[in-house]
Image 1 (cartoon, rainbow, N blue to C red):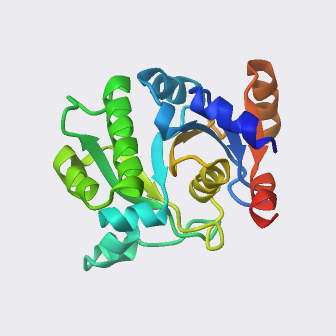
Image 2: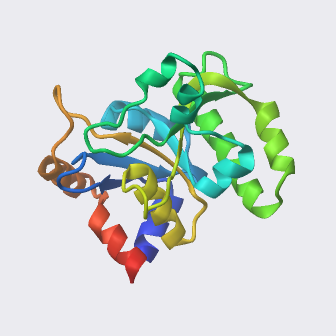
Length: 219
């Protein structure tokens, strides 16, 4: 894994393609760095990748903002706690809240979602630099429910989904833990690994596997 090339691609606003693991979800997500997202990035995720467009950050940042996991919210509500179940790959989901920036209109357009993501990235960057003032800014500038799902990394040692892999990758590259991604879909199913690899070669995108990220983490 060439870290300098990866960092250059992400900072320039280009996506990379990340496959998790054989025997897990076996899916590939198209990933953009949160600090380089434009409305065109959101359009690409929507029209080329096709899956749910999510924003992910680290546990430290989420705790600074007071963000819970969605399963914690559901467990606290009698009756709805019955809906909390582990998916087939046996990891609890990384979902937290769904939000919009207060200056969005419907919240769902490419420009609206880009505004929400760009503003989130500013908050995450500010938390790491200056602290508590950005927590207050978060509560002033966003509302929930909205159209951008927030995901929180549970840590690569506890969970090995795309949230953890991509957040950990940002750590390795020296970037803010701020990413936007969507699963690559095909006709009726998730796009298979081999087909995504062909797509990546054709489009000139970097394709990376979860096992490569884990190898870098342990080295």
